[in-house]
Image 1 (tube, rainbow, N blue to C red):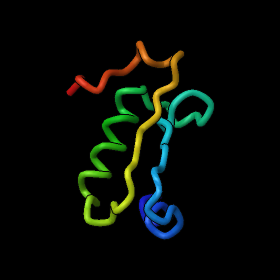
Image 2 (image 1 turned 180 degrees about the vertical axis):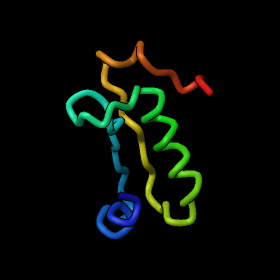
Image 3 (image 1 turned 90 degrees about the vertical axis):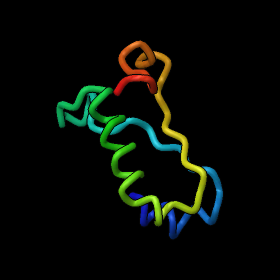
Image 4 (image 1 turned 45 degrees about the vertical axis):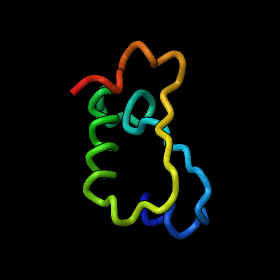
Length: 69
């Protein structure tokens, strides 16, 4: 995903929703999904040249917080 963003977003802001919850049937909680995204971005930070925003939908905002560890 980060490679695709790097190659195709041309420096523009990119929005990524939490993945692996609900309909995907992976079975991740919203906290787990956020943790995986943040860990991956931290690990591959040298590949990130675009501003990336993680989207949490209104109906899911009570299920996850950026302040959780």
